[in-house]
Image 1: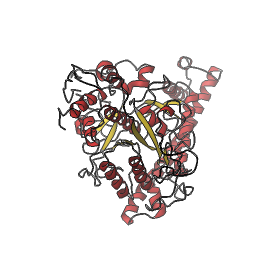
Image 2 (image 1 turned 180 degrees about the horizontal axis):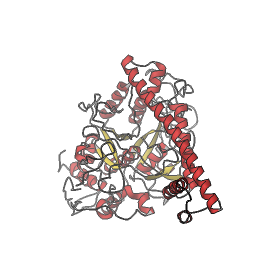
Image 3 (image 1 turned 90 degrees about the horizontal axis):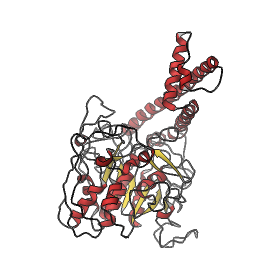
Image 4 (image 1 turned 30 degrees about the vertical axis):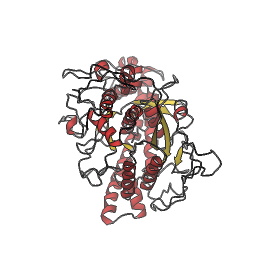
Length: 547
């Protein structure tokens, strides 16, 4: 999941103390371990550009930024030794297969011949050279509760819950659009007033501050304009933001919340018939330039670390398998279930799942796919969601999950659910949008203002637990690169147990007056740390530590 900003979406005592022995073939021996003092303070000055673009890789002790110590792990632990690549499936929107930072790290199906419209390798999918596209030519979609109402899915009680959510969201969207238009009008009026007083159309904050208002109304307009300029830097940028916001919410009404819209028709299948599987195509590329989510996610995991372009992914030995299954709207359970099975059957060790929804009429199909992945030793890294809510609350269901029933026993041991952190160490370290839950969120990782790949050889900051999940998927790939005999369940436990315990209470958006520890809002109570994970992985692989 991503935070859908309407414009361009821009915006520890150590749990385990371990010492490596001298004999090590993949990871250099170290004699010290990361420990975090109780009095560690956050970085006071604003992050520099290079820090902002790379903060998720930085180190809490050295940089006072709650990154995952990726750069430190490469500098102190990892030897440049070629290993068998780890295939990571990006189960998401399409990926820009031609991106300069992703093309070198794409998975290529060795048994398939591109463009001959045949299933050369006999896996049931034609022309799946770099993955598969379960969405065909579709892109916009309705939200699941909109589809439930439109198609009459489920019993009366289920439809009533969907109706309540639908009506709430329609009302909220319409109100937001009205506020946007009102704000645009106020800004235009204040701008016109400033232009008349100054006698020119372009001005800056200093010139505004020098104006004397003749009436309280003019003073109010100038104060408002000053505040707006202070936040945005320019009125043009602010108006562009508002225009983009208006377009985004209009799109929600047109597609996500439109009972009559059918984005699936072009695909030609029945998305609620699990036996109807002859659909989609072998091109998991993006359909248009706005389809950026999968590209951004893929870059976080594995953007080429050797080409001196753009960014560096977390992992250094990954092949990205693109599985296009998440539209602009809610994903279908059938696509997710079949996408998981495709990834497993075609060699993926890790599946990144940066999506989720509150209604899942065919959740059992996905549960069976999760079990299939577990039986085949495949790790699934799932984004916790961006509603700022407690997933332990029965009123806040989130699909897919690994417990079937709210707060029930985990039925698989290969799913790790990830909440999001911001770059400021301290009480506001947990991103305000991030979901949490002592039973339903496993760990936290960097997810706010993450710089990564975008379609068309571009790069951009985006925020969401969608960005935190691939950071963890990258750490998992690092672990498996050097310790390939570990199981998916072991890799999950290593990530959880090797994380850093932060000696601070954090403030949550849902209840800012009651700070909580990470132990109270996640299962591990820790933030993911690649450096420690590699140390613990070696200990487990050598049989020196049992999980």
